[in-house]
Image (tube, rainbow, N blue to C red; front, side, top):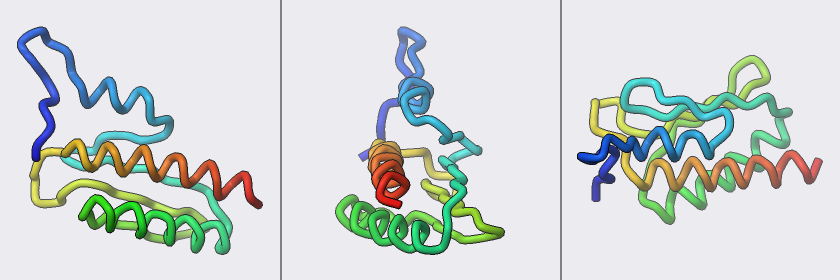
Length: 103
């Protein structure tokens, strides 16, 4: 299912959703977030992302580089960002807060 991101009224639903997701940016047809985490936080967050992504049948790109966790959601093939991508971003944001508060 594809989300309707704009309407005849001119409202941009993707922009509205992104304003609620601190730190997430749109890069073309992908959502991106970079987090400063230690190795144990990264491992815990990655497990939580996997559970949420499996439930939504999505495959995010999660990488570790220079002490940072980089997350990309959406299709690199140019497909539009879906409501599932936005939902996963929200779940990742909740998981991130939980992981950081635990340590």
